[in-house]
Length: 252
Image (tube, rainbow, N blue to C red; front, side, top):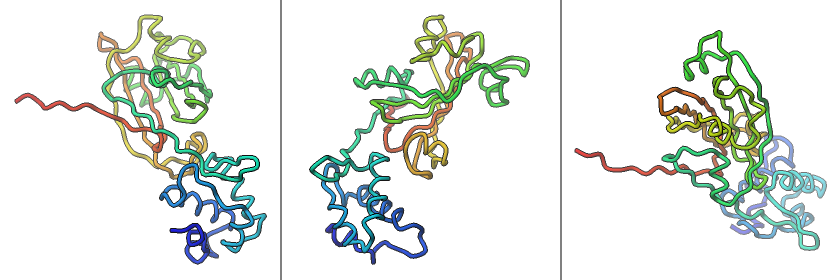
């Protein structure tokens, strides 16, 4: 489909579907998602988009600015606007028990984190069951937004017994490094993966639209003794991850 036909308002603009700049922004995002607008391809100038879509320059400029803010398009001085380059997906093995930091470092990616909260709390019923805690025990919680090369990748919320992690502030980058230093790094884990549609809060943190596809991973990790020492609930961007598992034929 040509860009002229794609931006023809008869195909997408509706009086009952909200603000015009939002409709235009979603139409361009749809074009990128369906391959009509390919990575690194140029977009028409704003005045041309306005003419093709029957919109004002102000409306087009507002839609374009939102797309720039979201990283969907990039503007190059003297060259115009371009669809952003495709971001590579990350393959993560389900057969290796590694931390986010270790996974990204093996790929040569620089990781950062934005702390959401950390501290000592009374355990929730879910934490109590997963970690075999009584209601008189305390639990250390750390929650952070994990980024690779500045790109939001996952929201990670981990809970641990306080004798395993007495000071949540000790975790600066890798939780498993802190656990290994005290001789409490887990050696196995059980994971449950489910597909979710991201709520407004999580979508905002991950830089995607509310309702976008995501992956929820719930993991309980254990020491060699069999004790559960980590209960983590993570939300991953659905457009950034492929989880890979090796399967072997069961012996008869």
